[in-house]
Length: 250
Ligand code: PEP
Image 1 (cartoon, rainbow, N blue to C red):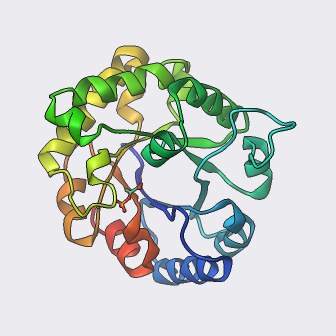
Image 2: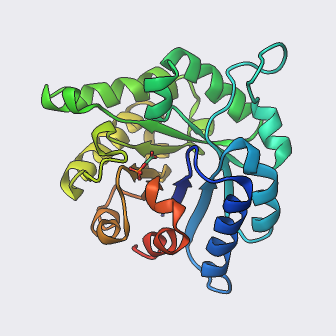
Image 3: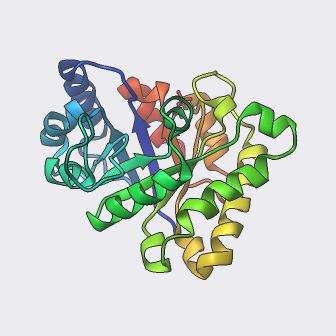
């Protein structure tokens, strides 16, 4: 049995008071209701401590959206994995396409980030996904496979076992265009096959989330597929009601 996960990626949205309000609303929406779905909030760095206090003891996980590729030192503006850990994070999103696209995130840098995150005991939510051009050229399986190989294949099976993978086709992120459940399932199955080629049966236990315009109206169909273990949710995670409704879609 793989862990079912619904993780929110708030991106660069909400002020601290707005984020606190959102976290409180998520908490209120789930309170007292036991669930087998793991919820994670991926918040801006500035919100980690405050949101952490609100969700403390609730079972909701706390994620940062990035970490530095260096351990510590003269790297102005960067936030290290150990800082995230000490601030209360249990998870970190790595390799999101917006970071790859706008901030020059490379596989090489991601290898360093992944190692530092794991050294601190943070669970990485590692994002992969192809652009529309790559899909139209028929290269989507190869592109995603090399993102997995170049970064995750640097791990041993014990560390790989704890990684959460998120398949997020770039053309579906924030566009309102969702991958069909068939498209998502075939890519998730491919990712699992690639992971199994390196990590064997460990791949069976790894959660692979779908991300890209996932919302209450399409989550059920996506989550019903055998290799889709949940979602990484951008826009819809900014409304507690929608986020919770997605989490109830299994
Ligand atoms: C994301 O950026 O991780 C994402 C899935 O965004 P959205 O749900 O808004 O497409």
